[in-house]
Image (cartoon, rainbow, N blue to C red):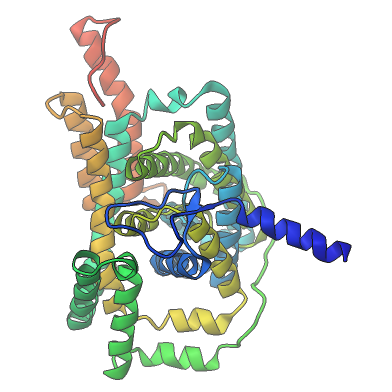
Length: 441
């Protein structure tokens, strides 16, 4: 009896983490579901499924490219998401998926073996935790001095636009399926009312998949993989090994992760209308710890996912309960190769139709930050920083340094974060000002 009573109290405590929005079944047009609220559990599970659909292709792509076990990455992605929600005290809705920033250094370190690669992931996580601790101890202004709205907005814009070619390539692979998927999503979001409008992304993906299946547009190799996959199976675990040569490759990744996390928190604050500056340090610590866990067990490093910001912007449902569902779903997926293979049968055209909208919405979140904070683009510092960062990201600038090829998101993020304080300092010295108001941004 005592055991069942304890379990019951634990369940009640878990349910009490979120207050029910309205009657839990309907959300009036124009209303939002706040991070600390939830709808009925069946609806919350549906919204969680949307987040899984948004993160899945990108999260599995990173381990596929770096030859890491996909199911292990999914496991630590789900565990990391739950850890993130706990550490940020349910204030920051976010999903922790595989970070694209790790692709270049892990690929370059492939000859050192997976153990050495994982050692790099682990150290990158520890460094990120250190940055988060410093932010909590010294205040968010430590980062605001070098990452004001013009910088965070630029990082979000370049991430969204850098992803655009991937969306258009997938769209062009199966244009009529992609167009149908996009049309269903837009129609549900714009014309439909109530629940259907808020589940527009999931509805578009399901309709696109069904039509592709009926028309024979599903890849035969993916169907064969689905048929042969086991229903249940444990992920592969690997131990890390710390090597200085690999550590040097992943250190620049930390700066990108900092920019992504700060940009994510700022973006969530913008779409939810809440001040989340006090959660920046917690976000960095949480993502750092999740990356440490992944490196310790065989998964790829994690980061807050921009794709899921697009889902929130489209649905206006910011409930962290939906992210909890998504995290648990990712863990379940990691234990079922069969289900993972099923999700992998989603055609490129369906993903292209969905992501061409989502990635554009990500970029517009950055633009919204600029407008909200009245960033002055007549200021040559702001203009120069954003121009360089956005073109580097959109053009996916690739430069090889010491045998390591660094891509556009990394170059754009590093350029905007490092160039802004330097250019601002030079501008101030030129004008001969040591005090007084600073330009917006």
